[in-house]
Image (cartoon, rainbow, N blue to C red; front, side, top):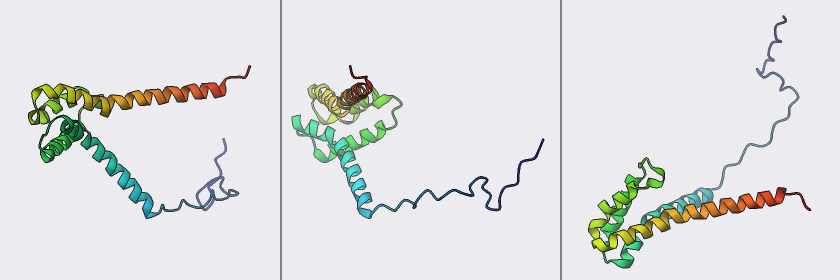
Length: 144
């Protein structure tokens, strides 16, 4: 059995005749990072403001306290071990937001929050997925 040939001095076997793949990627401009930061900040602000807007639309709760409790609830909800925080976030809503409004408004505002902030996106994602799947199947279908 023969021993393999030694590597060339550059340490890469078989790279002798290859050309470089191209120029290295260029650094994005600062506006790219600024717009990414701004869009991310707006997304998180909208996520936290949803509870605030729903509760304030039906009850005149203290705005600063409501927003702070909403933010705390969402931060604690990030560590819920269930998909989408199901069950846990509803309990946190009752604990954090419940004392700020009448008991009769707790369930309707909770359901509105979960419908707009969670289930709407699941339904929209399912629709878009099925639409894309249908489009791909239609593109692959043989013409008759």
